[in-house]
Every structure is written in structure tokens, then in C-alpha cells.
Amino acid sequence: MHSNCLLITPHKQKERKMVGQREAEQPIIPSVLLLPLPLQGPINCFLKLAHLLSLSSDHLNITFLNAEFVHQRLLDLPSRFPHVKFSQFSDGISGDEPRTPAKFPAMVGFLQAEISRRLPEFMESPAPATCLIADGVFTSVGERANELGIPVVYFSTLSPCCVWASCFLVPKLVDYGELPFKKGMDLDEPVSDIPGAADTSLRWCDLPGICRTYDMTDPYVQLVLKEFRELPNAQGHILNTFDDLEEPLLSELRLLCPNLYTIGPIHLHSRTRQQLESEQRITSNSLWQEDRSCIAWLDAQPSGSVIYVSFGSVVPLTMDQLTEFWYGLVNSGTRFLWVRRSGMVVEMEESEEISLQVPTEILEGTRDRGFIVKWAPQEEVLAHRAVGGFLTHSGWNSTLESIVEGVPMLCWPNGIDQLVISRFVGDVWKIGIDMKDICDRGVIEHMVIDLMKGRKDEFSRRANRLSKLAGEAVREGGSSWRALHRLIEDIKFMRLEVPKDKF
Ligand code: UDX
View 1: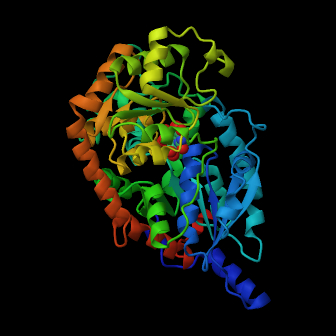
View 2: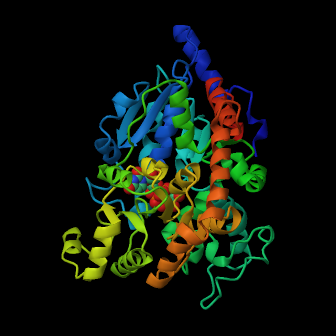
View 3: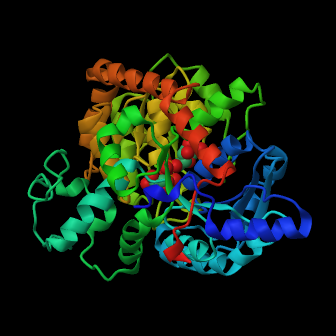
């Protein structure tokens, strides 16, 4: 990789500086473009990053490339981020149409083309872009930026354990002819005959979502494979993690991507800096209206008694799965707070749910011990003293938010990086249970009881230890604090260089 890229002013930037000096005797101001994937998790991460970068706003121009759909749902962004310029663009999907997983490949393709086309606009004076920070999925935009002489840093908002598995294991699986999986293969077997895999406890069923395909020509699979092949070509990589959580894997990742900035957990980092700077708490980045009535309900519950249930912003549920979860939760006798976002259940219109034939004992159990909302202020919920466990789809943001609050997890992963994360929660960090590929009311009931009672102490002890380490990482002098400082300095002093062969 380009370890020699640091500490030298890029060739094209030098050229531009000379031109600038001749015209106006003004040096170039470091200007960073932020390009998130317009989905809830990545948007959260990029807005927190914008906040952290804006702490040096006197030295840094920040432009946030925001999908119109996101911008319209977060109209207060310009007032909340006075130092950030927001530039809007279409994501190719009309209006409020749901951004479902099936639409991702087309959406990412559209965005890559649209942003690549518009990149030259951001090269113009008075503050031409000197660095692009893009979600790791936008490798074509990254290539185009390099052609224009703009250094690129990818921010992979997926979990680093999945990035690691995708960069090191998946290419080998393809080479060894193990992908696509053979029909009838036992996915519970460990992945042991692939070099590098023996040191982990990953089974075939724990590999990233794309490994489950039976069609390697699927456009989504191709997109993801391309992303991970091209990821190392950037001049730097930001990861939302902290060194103490994933160190052995991070060392291996550094072999491929030497310039890693591990600045997470980014939401805690942003919150800690706000407290330091005595800033007002940044209000929500939620793309849906938060129902705060759940906080009043939690206030009335005993400490550690409630399991919080949420499957994030994109995972769909079938009607059967919804029913199994509902029975499992009610039969466990545990109090629960459940986020059931609009459109979460496939095969069903929102209005139909009301007229569902739900058995009386389920409705009564829910009334006695349950509370259901469409969208919750999740960080606040997880930090609430009444919450003792989290039934989650294992999205990376949810997982980190749970780790930060020391809340043990029951994981029901759906795809993408969630399959790897849930294995790490259950088997590496040992702060919860991985329910992978099972959706049965009896299993759910017993696992909920195990999480909230049977194994509560052992999980909580380890989760609290990780929570403490996360706090140390983002405090002044901690590993994430230092990584952020280095990132800002590298951007400010334009130490990131595009290798000459790239433009
Ligand atoms: C997607 C992918 O599904 C996931 O695998 C990947 O790791 C990140 O991108 P998503 O499914 O939305 O993300 O899950 P997650 O990463 O957990 O992000 C959800 C975000 O929404 C969290 O920050 C959470 O705090 C927030 N949220 C969720 C709310 O604010 N309120 C809710 O009611 C539910």
C-alpha cells in the first residue's frame, strides 16, 4: 500500500496552490468532502464525524454531500452544524419511497455515477476539495476523485470484523472454489481449512451475508466484492471501532490498509467532545420521528428489567417471524420495549397489523409488560437504567451503542455484516447470545430468560468492562482520541497524497 503517501504535499495540490498564489496570493484552505451512504446507520456515523471535524472548523472547510431524501427529513441540519456546508443530490429513488435492501444496488450505482459526475464542481475556487471521505461502498467515486488529484479516505461504517472477513477470507473462499456454497453443506462447521481462518471461531454461517449466495453474478454480490477488492486503494481508512475491542484483527487489516484511523465508538466520541467543549447536546439524527413516550414508560419500570427490541432501519420481518418474536417475548414473562417501524413487516400493509387476529393472551401479555413504538431515541433507551438487555439484528451502530452502555445482547442477525458481528458478540466478546438462523417462539423465550436472568451477571460483567474501555479510548490521550487528532492533522496539513500513477 501507499505507506509513503504521508507527509508530502500532493502533486496536483501543489500545482493548484501555485496557481492560487499567482492569482490571489492565498494558500489553499484544507477542504473536506463527506459522502455518506444515505441510510440511517451510515448517516449517523457521518454526522458524528462532521461534528468531530468541525471542532477544527477554523482550519477546515467541510462540505456534506447529502441525499435530498435525508436532507428533507433533517431540516435542522444547517442550524445544528453551522460550520458545515450541506450540498444536496438525488439518490435516484423518488420521494418517500422506502429505501429497501432490494433497491440498494441500483441506489448505489446511481449515486456513484451522480457524484462522480459532479465531483469537478467541488474542485473549483475559492475552496477546492483537498480530501474526500466517502463510505467504503463508493469505490468508483474514490477512483474518480483520485483521477482528479483528490486524496480519498474511506469510512467503512460496517463492522471491522466484517471488513476483515471480507478482505481476508472471502477472496480466498472464491479462489478455493468454496463460494458459492454447495447445496446441502453444513454451515455450522468451522471455516478451518482456509488459511487465516483457523485462528477465529467463525463457522460458515458466520461469514458476511454475500457468502450465502448461490449466484455469484448477482449485482449486489458483485458490488460488494468490488468494494472490498478496491478498498485498500485509498489513502486512508476510518473505522468505527476502538483498538481494545478488535486489536488482533486490526493488526491484520493494517497489512492491507496501513493508514487506519480507529476513531470509535464515534457516537461516544462525539458525545464526549460535546461535554468537553460544553456544547449543547446535538439533537437526534433520526430519519424517523422518535416516540419519546417510551422514556416515560421506562421510568416506571424496575432497574435492569426491560429487554429492548429493535431490528434497525432496514431489516424486514415476515408475518411469521413477527408472530414468533411476539409469542417468545410475551411467554418469557420479561418486560419489553419493542420498536416496530412502519413497513418493517413484509407481506403486510401498516393498517393490516391493527386488524391482525392476535390471541387475547398475547395482547394481554403485551399490555401488562410490553410497550411498542414505531421509532425510539435508541441511544437514550440503551442508557436507561431500566434496560437490562437488547434483542437486536446486530447492526454495527446498534452493537456499539449497546457495548458503550454495557448492555448484553441477544442477536438475531439478518445479513450483511450482522452475521459476523453476532458471532463476535456470542463467541469472542462473550457479551450475549447468537440466535443465528433460528426464529422459534420457544427458543426466543428461553434465550430471553437466559439473557435477562440465567447468564445476566457473566454477560454484564464483560459488557461493563468493554464499556469502560470504550470510554477510555475516546478520552483525551486514548487510542481513538489520538487517531482522530492524527486524521484532522493529516487533512489540515494535506499530508494525504494521491500516488502519481493514479492521475
Ligand atoms: C445498516 C446495516 O443493516 C447494518 O448491518 C450495518 O452494520 C450498518 O448499516 P441498520 O440496519 O440501520 O444499518 O442498523 P444499525 O447499524 O444498528 O443502525 C441503526 C441506527 O438507527 C442506530 O444508530 C440506532 O441508534 C438508530 N435507531 C434505531 C434509532 O435511533 N431508533 C430506533 O428506534 C432504531
